[in-house]
Figure 1 (cartoon, rainbow, N blue to C red):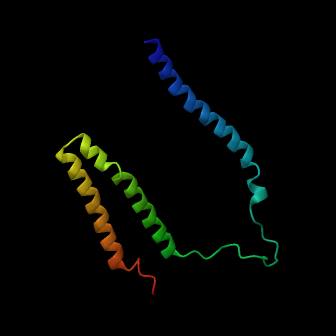
Figure 2 (spheres, rainbow, N blue to C red):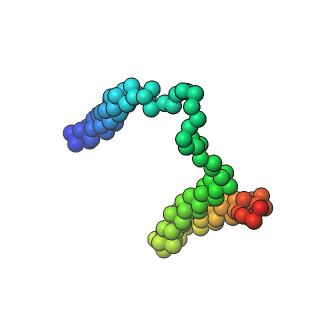
Length: 117
């Protein structure tokens, strides 16, 4: 009982301490915000302040992250299927694959994966 209450108190105290420390660090960096902001002086800038960013590249990067997460979710399924032969496990696997396949077909039809344009 003592160990359980100690862990409970620790699980409350540690996040509060992390929050307080991050708040103190943020207050110190907040005063430098005006120093780091750009100002108008009438002169043209030497460099481009904004780099052009391709939204198609961003969409492809998001698709990569989604399919990367899919690999992480799908990898343990063969091991889990050997441990428990439940139909719900197979149904979950098929549901995840169906959602990803529908999303891939939608992106393909939309032309997001076609770089010839």
